[in-house]
Image (cartoon, rainbow, N blue to C red; front, side, top):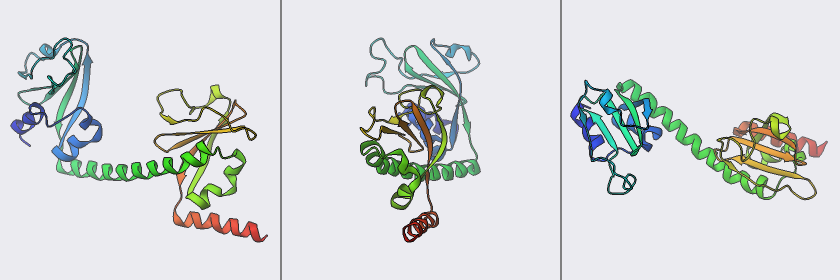
Length: 234
């Protein structure tokens, strides 16, 4: 893309902030934004050697309204971009045009990530009723039940008191599908992360177990089924 085309993308509303995270900029347009700074004040004038193409200024009270849809400013050489999420936050990015080879690599990586995201969403859908709603007892983890019925293996990575756990529900920046109660009788409660990667089992209120959630291959599932059949006939 040439400079005029890039500038038009940022001034006609074709790009939104979420496109940075989704990799749409790289995959669709072959450009990349690299954050270089953030300020609570308008510091665009610090780039005194650059001419800014400025959209309508954000106003008091209207800074997040539909009257101000375009929040991007870009220099005339398309080298620096400023995003204004409101009238007291300015985020600056270096704009880089990537090569076709780099673009193809990012596209492939995104395709793989999208496939994994779909699979992880399936894991959350499968495990939510089994672990969280039905509160599967902890002693059922190592029986092969999850492996043979759902193709999922829980790999233990840590066990300890609440204060020592790396992954614990309702703490930190990790999002959880959480259940705040324990099952009466077995005293077991489960929580899983919304990305379907981590499960946390709570036993008797302050005995926590963290698991990595692994998806088994068909061959691995068959191995568990063979072991189960062997145990039944033993």
